[in-house]
View (tube, rainbow, N blue to C red):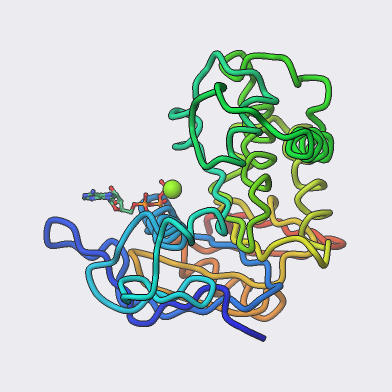
Amino acid sequence: MSDVLELQDVSVVREGRALVDQVSWSVKEGERWVILGPNGAGKTTLLNIASTYLFPSSGTVSILGETLGSPGTDVFELRPRVGMAGIALADKLPKRQTVLQTVLTAAYGMTAGWQEEYEDIDEQRARAFLDRLGMSEYLDRRFGTLSEGERKRTLIARALMTDPELLLLDEPAAGLDLGGREDLVRRLGRLARDPIAPSMIMVTHHVEEIAPGFTHVLMIRQGKVLAAGPVELELTSRNLSLCFGLPLVVEQVGDRWTAQGLPMS
Ligand SMILES: Nc1ncnc2c1ncn2[C@@H]1O[C@H](COP(=O)(O)OP(=O)(O)OP(=O)(O)O)[C@@H](O)[C@H]1O
Ligand SMILES: [Mg+2]
C-alpha cells in the first residue's frame, strides 16, 4: 500500500522550542488514524503540516507521494487533494454565506465568493455531502447562525467536496452535547468504514470520540511520539497514562472506548 503521509524526523521549532520533536510517522492508504495528546502536545501543528500549510523546520514530509520542498512539488496542486476541517477554518468563512454556498465554494478552493457559476453537478455533490452529515434542513441557513455542532458538520461536508484523498479533522466533536457527539461519531464511523472514503486523520482529546472503523492511533506528548500503531495494540491504559501524565484506565465497551482516572488511594 502506498503512503498517504510520511514524516521522517520532522521537527517544528518556534522560539527555541520544538513543538513537534523529531516525529517519524507514516499513514498508508485506507488507514484511519486518531491523534491523541494533551493540550499543547502538537496535534494541530501536525495537521497543519499534513495539510501542506506548515513547512517543518527540519525533516522530510511526503504527502500523497509528493515531497514538500522538492522541485517537482506544487503545494497548490496538492492542497485540493487534502481536505481539512478544523475550527480555525470556520473563522475564515463568510458568516453571511448559506450552508450550501459554504460547501460549494470548497469546490473552487476559495473561502469566499459567490460570483462564480457553479455547475449543477457540484451543487448535487454539495447537497449529497450535506445530506450525509445530516444537514439537509439547513441548506439556506447562514453559516454564521449555526450552532457549533451544525457548523462542524458543515465543515466536514465542505472538506469532502474536493474529493480529497486525505481527510484531516481537528477535534470534530469538541463542544458538542452528548447527542451531537454520538450523532457525529456515528456519521464518522460510517465514513471510516466506507472503503471508498478518503484516508482519515482525526485529532481528539477523548477516546469516547473514536468511531468504530478507526484503525490506528498516534499518541503524542510534548511534540514527541509516544505510541503509534493499530488501535487494539496501542490504545492501552499504560500508553494513555504516559500520554496524559496521570494514571488512566482505558476499556473497550462493544466497539467503542472509554477512559477514566484511577481513584486516588
Ligand atoms: N507560532 C507559534 N509560536 C510559538 N509557539 C507556538 C506557535 N504555534 C503554536 N505554538 C505552541 O505549540 C504548542 C503546540 O500547539 P498545537 O496547537 O499543535 O497543540 P495541540 O496539541 O493542538 O493542543 P490543543 O489540544 O490545545 O489543541 C503549544 O504549546 C502552542 O502554544
Ligand atoms: Mg489543537
